Length: 99
Image (cartoon, rainbow, N blue to C red; front, side, top):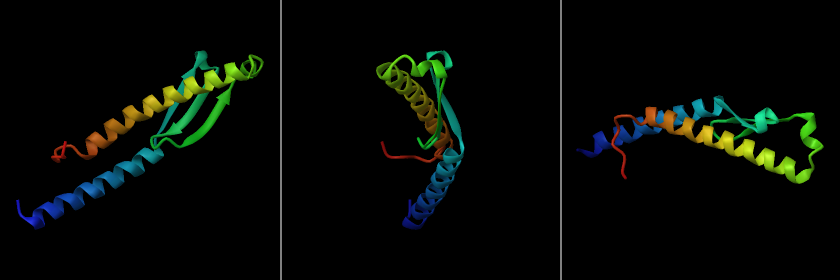
């Protein structure tokens, strides 16, 4: 493969990845814990958009609140990870990447 062709492929990949990153920034996932007691809205780039807690959660104490928020965050992050894998996989489909 000649250098010009390699540079063209690299440029095309860079454009596709940038487009995929913009797409991820606009996509949202929701992490849910304790039957909806806490819902976290996060973008596909891990930006926290909103946290909603049911009123009854606050009466459970600080440790319980922290655990429920952490569980909702972990759920949102797992969903964002899956979304990132999907979107980036589509962006790089057919392009050989180094292992």
